[in-house]
Amino acid sequence: MDFTAWKTDNYKFVGSAFDYAYNNRLNKFLSIVGVASAKSIDYELTGSGGYGEMPAYDGNNLNEAAKKRGFKTIITPQEFELTETIGYKQAKVDKSGECARVGKLLGNSAAMTVYLHLLRMFGRAYNSDYKGGDAKPWAATDHPVASKGSTGRTYVADSDAGTFSNLITSALSVSAITAAQAMGGRMTTPDGLPLAADYNLLLVSPELEADAKKICGENAKYRPQRNPDDNTNAANPVADLQYMVVGGGADGFTKKQWAICDPVLMKEMVKLVYITRPTVKQHDLDNPWKDAYSAYADFGCGWGDARQIIFSNPS
Image: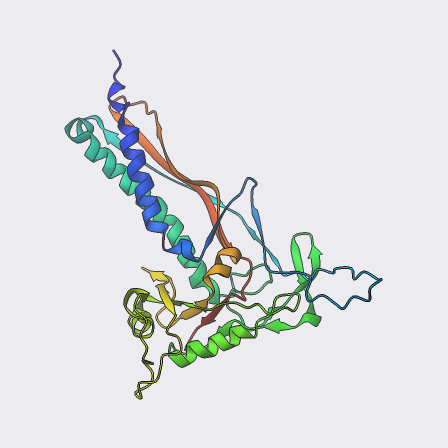
C-alpha cells in the first residue's frame, strides 16, 4: 500500500502560492535594481567607462582609442534555505488551503530575505565598513573618477583623474533636491563625458514619506504645481519627481536620510545577482505522514558606480 499518495498533488498548490508571494513582494525594488544571473562563484559588476570625446581627424592618421575605466565590484552570492512540513491530517482536512498557506509563507520569507538585503545595501551606503570596487562607501565625498588599471581583481584609482562627491548633508526640501540635481548635472563619466543623468526619483526613509508626498504628490501620481517650500504660490521646480520609500523595520535609510537618483542608470549599475532564484522544492521525509517543502535561494547584491545617485545624510 502506498502511504505517500496523499502528497502527490500538494506541490501545485504550494508552488503557485510561493511564486505569487515572492514576485509580489519584490516588484517595487526592481524599478531601481537590475537583475543578473551568475554561473560562477561570484559576479563582476563593472562601472561606467568609455573612450571619451573623439579627437579631430586629419584625413590620414587614425586616432587610436584609449579606454578610461571605472571600477569593478565583486558580488559573491550566498545560499539561503528554509523548510516547512505539511501533516497528513492538515492536508486531509483542507488540502488546498494548507498547501497555499505553506507556499505563501515560504514565498514571503524568500522575498523578504532578498528585500532586506537590498534595504541593507542602501542603509550601509554611508558606512565605511562596506566599500565598493573603488574602495569607498557608496555615499562618499571622494570617489575616484577613474581607475588606471588593476592588480589582480583590485582596481587602482587614477589620482590624476580627480575625485567626485555623491554625498551631501542637507535636510529634505525642494531647494535641497534641486541643489542635488544641479550637482548631478556636473557629473562626468570616467572618460570625461557628461553623465547626462535624469535624477527624477526621490528615495526617502519611512519618516520622510509625508514630506515626499508634499513634494511629489500622494503615491507619486499627482504632480503639484505649487512649491511646498514657498508661500508665494511659485511653481514647483521638481513637479515631475516621483518618490519611493527605502526602509522597513530596522533596515534601510534612517530617520533623516534620503537620496535622489536616475532609475534607468540605477538598473545598469546596481544589481541583484542570482545563482539560483528563490524556488521551492518538495522532498521526501522518513515520516510517511509528513510532506516537506524547502525554499532555497542563492543571491547577492551590490553597486558598481556611485554617479547615478546622490545621498544626503543630515545631522
